[in-house]
Image (tube, rainbow, N blue to C red; front, top):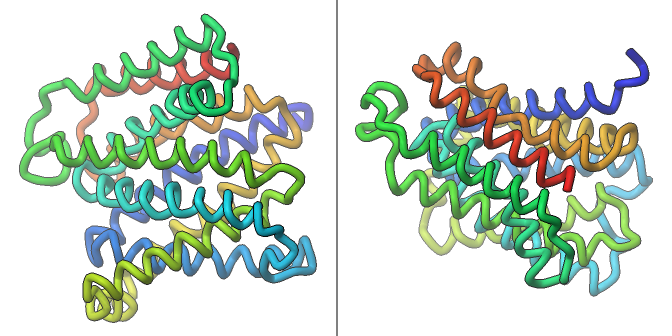
Length: 299
């Protein structure tokens, strides 16, 4: 069993992200996506500060260069702010299952942006994997579902799908930008920079849109705070920690493929905890999409 600790950690990460998305969805329905993002990033940054003190002896990334701050800060703006602004609204619009399925498009989008911007090579197998992932996601999203199958009056909603696509694109661009800033720098400190910039952008948006009263009301909602705390623990903290452990213990391709299985793990969780009815097409489409991601990394 010890020979497969990396693979088990990667699968554990996928489960954490699936559970975390459910927790964030429930919190978002109570307090809204904008207050949730502020609270979520503040909690995640708090956990990262504690981890930084324990692992690096530094609470904050004070050792980063100006260039690292630029690229990682830009990554935080695009990924944590713009991308998560779309993704967490999609959680509310179409639910966590379809949102995570759409987010499976992030790896293919990352590969395309890598190719266009950084000149990374795309093999024929990678292109096949990208096509399969796109087909799996499109197959599920094109299914006609009864209105009761997912939260909201129309399921799935076009706006929610577009928000999910915005989240996937933001995550992909954010990852490419973070590559430039992570050269010769520690992952935890890099994540802190992204969190700091993302949180600052959300706070600025709250001030600009007069959402302060909603944020204060959200801070008084114990149920929502509980869900947000669980989500922050499972996602940015425990999930990312397990992901880093997985990358240390197994190959990057295997780890990335297993990390992408969240759309499969979310299906029984959504059925059990959200009461969502998932048909054979929804299950097979998720499996096809994840298989495409695996081929992408295998290429």
